Length: 230
Image (cartoon, rainbow, N blue to C red; front, top):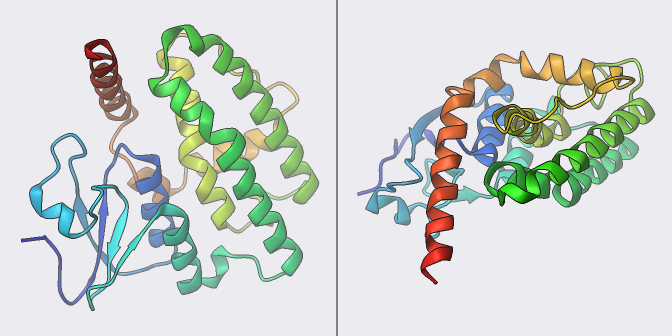
């Protein structure tokens, strides 16, 4: 039988998954009263298929039984609960959607490559990540040059959407012992990174970066073993 509180919102997450981190951060920032259920992604309980047939996290079970899936939509759900997470201006909302689209198309692919991609690709991935943080710096300067976040000094869904991936950029570079990403001239991005990395909601969303790296290293070994057996 699936684990859930029938009288409370239940969040199914994992401390090693960036998509689950988005859900934790957004729901925490929205001050949603929820119960945490952690799912072992490498040893999923049989009952979890009753919550999410594909066994993915995050998932949010409402007291009435409806289940919300996909981190992007859960982030939007949290923003509907706490409107401070979503800009009111139509132009700022346009900017937010553009940023999130950019993250999906340009930032996300490097996450997979740096964390679980072939070793021979790692150096070229680092070079592309350098380009991405430069572009993010330019975007931040364009939208909100003097503020902290993408929109003013208030955290928004654009920040939440990006944050766990940037964490993995720096984690991957460090663990692969590559040259550090050059932040020279990227003061606006650095201001954003330093502030978001210190958010209590972000720190709540994972246990340790070593745990993230160990889990993904184990995943990579499994994927490599599957490829070699084909």
